[in-house]
Amino acid sequence: MSAQFLRVSDLTVDGLQRVLDLAAAVKVHPKSVAGARLGTQVGLFFEKPSTRTRVSSEVAVSHLGAHAVVLKADEVGLGKREAVEDVARVLDRYLDVLALRVFDHSNLVTIAEHSKAPVINLLSDIAHPCQALADLQTVAENRPLPGTVLCYIGDGNNVCNSLMVAGAMTGMHVRVVTPEGYAPSADEIDRASRLAADSGGSIFVTESLAEGTDGADVIYTDVWASMGQETEAAERRDAFAGYQVDEKVLASASDEAIFLHCLPAHRGEEVTHEVMEHQRSKVFDQAENRMHAFKALLLHLTEA
Ligand code: CP
Ligand code: NVA
Image 1 (cartoon, rainbow, N blue to C red):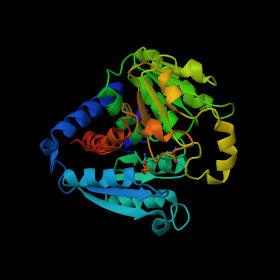
Image 2 (cartoon, rainbow, N blue to C red):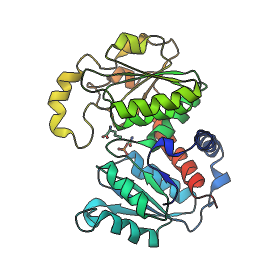
Image 3 (tube, rainbow, N blue to C red):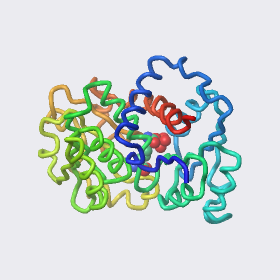
Image 4 (cartoon, rainbow, N blue to C red):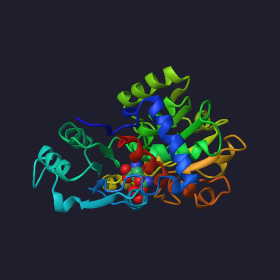
């Protein structure tokens, strides 16, 4: 097994800080790393749709002088045309890094177990760690991470899980506000809470919007139905009614609170148009940071 980034906690606290520092540095000085990984072959595999991840990772690879091989799920047939472990053992003969977006996180674990090349999670059913790197980078552009109160409102999903861990590792206070039945799993809360105990941060899960948003420095939301949950969309719209981020919710946070969303956003559902366009909405900085953060992660994982 080689280096992997299936969850944010695959990095040490120091490693995470290094990636964040590097991401900030390459954003300011992109030329400093231009061509830094000439000849490195990076596989980018997608079982689900993607705009940000697909384009930001391919462009990051190109800036570094590396080469991206983009693989579509229907061509590879992971676990269908070929056993998952065989795909891993074949691809690592050609590629120096395997980065994959999958439905089933356990397939990523199998690939990482059988690949000599580093494996990166580009989103699974339970984690979106590359997103969390860009999220932290964006928060850090606005205020120091330690002590920051981040309130995530919505589904206790992949994005929420990675944000809890990333926040916990950097001394943030992460509050998660979900309707009944949609909280993150107890395992994910425990994992993040243990990390928070070491950093001086905290994890707090509630069904009360007021408890979550009061004085928060960051308000964050994500779609109510993730990719693969489309058939639950109507049921979820009912369950999440009352958890929309609107200007009133933003106003109940601190005066300087910023708004984040991993995107794509469904305006009129989890967030209003006015909040998306608010002067304290940083969602497009956050989307841009996906590219800088991925570049930094690749540099970190492929260090000689
Ligand atoms: N935030 C994010 O991962 O976007 P895509 O699904 O478009 O890649
Ligand atoms: N939770 C969403 C994130 C999309 C970037 C999903 O998995 O579809």
